Length: 55
Image (cartoon, rainbow, N blue to C red; front, side, top):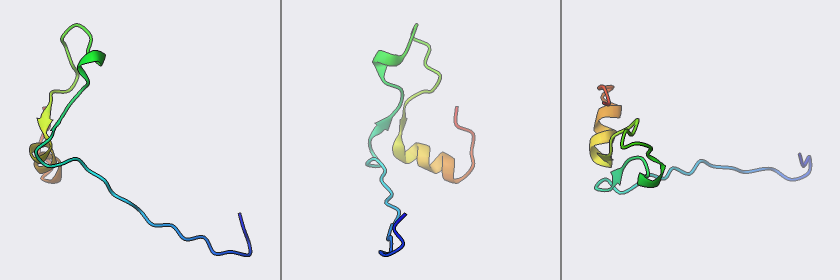
């Protein structure tokens, strides 16, 4: 920690385009049984923001 200079920091938020599909990588899915299904990010965000179940 520098006691002479002031430290400045700010949060940066990044998210995918609302029309992108977000899901597990195909090469990481074993036995065609992914733990999560792919979602269009817009749909996922709607479910998450409204506290609806995400299947």
